[in-house]
Image (cartoon, rainbow, N blue to C red; front, side, top):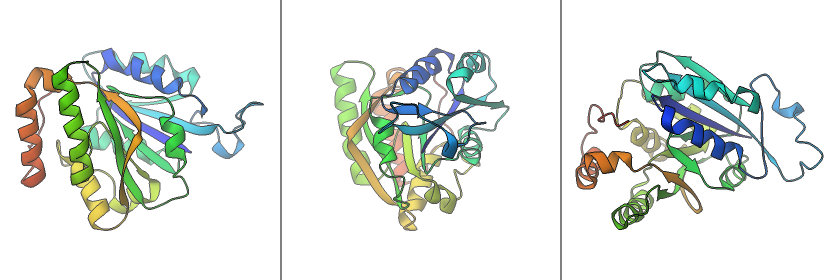
Length: 245
C-alpha cells in the first residue's frame, strides 16, 4: 500500500485540486483511517488495483484549508490539524499514522499525473529505496519549461528533490524522519542521510511525472531561487524560505 502525506499551511487555493487529482488516479482504491488495509475489498473489479491512504496534515493559518480538506472525509481523506511548528513536524506526524509500505511526501500544490500511485506500489516489497520523479511546470512558458528540464537533470545528478519525495517506510524509520529544527533544506538532509548511510538507493523515475506550481519562481525570480538552492546544496541551506501564497 502507498501512503501519501501532504503538509498544508494556508493552501486553500491549491489543496482541493490536488485532492481531486489524487482521487481520480486510475486503478487506486483509497482507504479511511478506521479501515484495515488487509480487510479492504477493492470491489468486484478490483483486480490489479492498489490500496492507498491519503493523510493531509494542516497547520492552522489564516484561510480555510482545513475546511476544504474536511469536505473529502467521506472519500477516504484523513485529516489531521493543529498548530505545528513547520513542514517537517507536519510530515513526521503524517508518517506516524501511515500504514503503507511506500511513503510519498507530496507538496500541497503538486498534482500527480495518472498512474503515479500504481507505479510506486511496484516498490512495496523493495525496502531500500528513496527518490523523486520527473516534474513538469504548471505554466506553459519557455522559461518555466527550460528551468524544470534543467531541474530534473539536477535531481538525477545531485540526488535531490523538489515537491515530492518517496521512500520505503523502512528508510524513513532508519533516517528518523525529517529534522524538525530546520525550516528549510530538511528534504535535502533527509535524502542525504538515507543515501550516504546506505539506508536507501536513490531512484529517479522518469516514466511517471507530476505537475508542480511555479509560483515561487514567478514571484521571487528564477535566478534568485536557483542561486539559493545551489548555495543550500554546496554550503548551508537558508534558515527559512520566503512564504509564497
